[in-house]
View 1: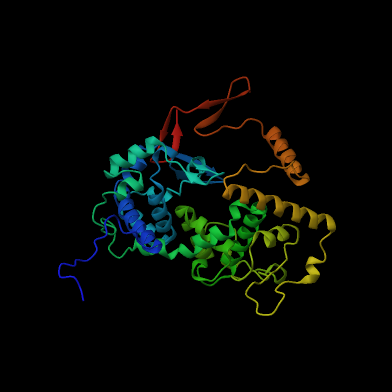
View 2: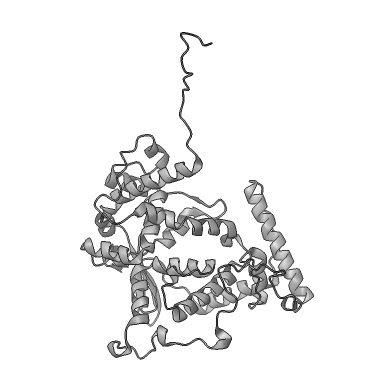
Length: 393
C-alpha cells in the first residue's frame, strides 16, 4: 500500500560530483580561461616587464611575476607547450615572431611558490591584469560560481584538443607527486643523472623521446626542454640537419655514438626511483633495482655490499631526516632541524669561494659599466623592451 498523496523526497543543497568528474570540470573551465588569456597574449607580451635570461650564446624571454596568469591557466599553457609541433604552428599563426621565444616562466613561478607549503600565491597586479584581459576573476573558486558555458579553444585551431592535452599528462603528474623528488635528499643527483640519461636517449633513439616508454627522470627532462620552445626547436634541428647544410663544425647529435660502457644500463621505465634507491645512486651510480622484475631480488646484492659503513650511515641518516621533515610538514608540525653534514659544509664552502672569485655580478635588469679609471660599476636599466626581451637605459 502507498499513500495517495505520497511525493518523492526532495533533496535540497548542491550535489557533490565524484572527484574525477570535479577534476575534469575544472580542466574544461581552465581551458576556457586559458583561451581568453591566450587571445590577449599579444598585450601581455608587449606590455609585460619581460626580461632576457642569458645562457651561453642564446637567450630566452620570460614574463615576470606580475604578468602571470592564474595557476589553472598555467596548467593548460604547460600542457599546450608540450605538444611542440602544434604549439609552434599556433604561435606562428598569431603573427608574432617572438612568441615562440617566450618560455615557461620558471623564475617567476619559483618566486611565487612557498617551498615549505608548496602553495602558489598570484600577486594582486597579476590578478588585476588577468581580470582586465579576460573579464574573469583570477580566483578559480570565484569563477566557478558563475562560469560561462564551456566552449573549447575558441579562436584556436578546431583540431586542437587542450582538454585531452592536459589529461594526457595526468600519469606523469601522479608519478611526480608519488616520487616527490622535490623533497628528496638526492634531488640534485637525481636531476644530474636524468639530464645525462635524457641526452643519451636523444642521441640513440630513432623516435622522439615523448613516443617512448622512458624513466620518469628522462620524461621530466624532455618536458622541461619543451618548455623552452625556441631552444627545443633549435636542438631538434641540430639533431636532424645534414652536416652539408650546417655551418657548425660540431658533429650532429644523431651522429654521436654511445660506447658500450656508456650505454643505458638498467635505466628502464620500471626502475625504482624512490628516495632510497636514488640516495644509493648518489654513492653507487650503477645501482639498479627493477621493481618490475618477477624474480626477487631485483637488485645486485654484491653492489650494495661495496658500501662502507660510513656511506651506509650517511644514507640512513639522510633518509631518516628527510622523511621526518616531510612527515612533520604533512602534519603541519614544526620542521625538525639538524647540523649541516660534511657534504653540505663542503658545498657551502665551495659556493662561498665561487662567489668570492666571481665578485659582485649584475642582477636582473642591471648591467656592468667600465669607468674611465678602470673600475666597474653596476647600473640599473630604466626601461625594458618586452617584445625583444632586451633591456635598455
